[in-house]
Every structure is written in C-alpha cells, then in structure tokens.
Length: 284
Image 1 (cartoon, rainbow, N blue to C red):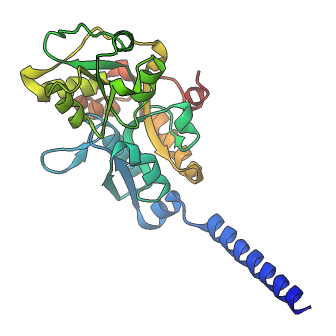
Image 2 (cartoon, rainbow, N blue to C red):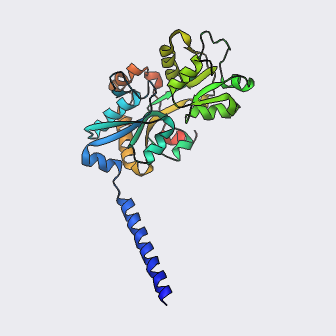
Image 3 (cartoon, one colour):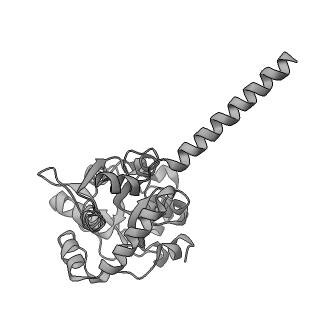
C-alpha cells in the first residue's frame, strides 16, 4: 500500500512538473515579446562580405544587417545588437537563444526550412569559383572537379555549396572544408586548393582582397536550380514576428530606399526576385 502511495505521489509530482514546464514553455517570451517590451532585437551573423561583416571601424554592416536594421526600426526597434558566430553555428545559435534572428544572407533550402522559418528572399544570386590568375587548370564547373580526383575545392563548412559539390560527384577527400571565406582565400593562395566556391559577389570580393594572386571566374557553369535565395531566418516559435517582417519586406523590397541600401554591397535590380519562401521550401 505504501509503495502504491509513493508511486502515485511520484506520478502526480511528475505530471505536475510536466504541466508547469509546458505552461512555462507556452508562455515563454518570444522575440516579438522582447521587441515590444524592450525595443531591442539581436541578429546573428558570420563574417562574409558583402552579406554580413564587421567593417574597419568595427561596425557590423552588409546587405543583411542593414536591411534588418531598417525593417526592425519600422517595427519599433530602438536597438539592434549583433552577435558574431561561425557559419555552421548560426542555426544552433538561433535555437540556443544566443540571438533572435539570423541576418547573414543565408540561403533558403528545403533542409533548412525544417529547422527555421525564413522570410521571403531579399535577393537571388548564383555562384562562381575563385582561382589562380588566368585559371590555369581551366575550371568552370563542379563537373570539372568530379572528373579529376587530383583537384581540390575549398568550401565553407555548412554552406549549400558543400551539398552541391557532393551531389555533383566530388569526393569528400577532394573537398577542403574551412570555417570562413578568409580561409577559402588563403587555401587558394597557398595552393592547398585549386579553387574555392561561393556566391559570385563573395568570390569577387575575395578576388579584390587577394590582389594579383587570385581571380574570380566569369564563366562558371552551374545547375539553374543552384540559384541561391537569401533571407532572414527565425525560430519556429517566432512565426508572428517573421510574418510582420515579411509584410514590411513586401512593401519595401524593390523601392528606391532598398536599392540605395544594398548598392554599396554590389546588389542591384537584377538580384530582386518574386520567389516566396514557401515555394523554395517546397523545392520549386
């Protein structure tokens, strides 16, 4: 009898604790609650020009942070904090509560859509290669690497290009995974990699930084389905805030203010897209 009572008490306590946890979870502050109460929001970014990076003065800038600041200001934000992290830690950092939004120019993919909520895309963009001057190994596609096992390709860990490379038949031992684009540049300059792969804007920027030691190809042949669509990303429980941001973006993207804001980072009308996150998440 005593054992039965103890078991019943433990069960009751367990159910009570679970109920409290569920109640707390359901009423935990969302990012929108935080914004409304404090006027503050925080963005997570990874140093990658021109999408999101710290400039020489230490200010966090780039296409995505600048757009985030403007849109969140429209929603009442008085302060937008920035948290630096490695690319592969952006989604885990978002879920861990290190920041409220990913503003790093992250591509929408069906795989990522299972983990985060995206706004509709801010831009569309293709990829290209960073190579030695004159492109001595005549590299123009993923297929060129798949056909020659001796070639090495530098890829930033956690990016869609890693999946594209593997899907194209490039072996894992041909792929040099690095933490960021600076490491990609160094790998090509040092000869550890025959090329680096990334967005056309990023590779052009690395080519400028690398001076006469590297160049970005202008004739990269890629699968049209690899066109990237960049957007802000939110936790699943922050759908209400995502929807409010989406509504503001819909009114603002393509405006003169938008084009002025992104022009310093190499974006123009050609990067505007009418694709929706829902379409891209479905793989269409």
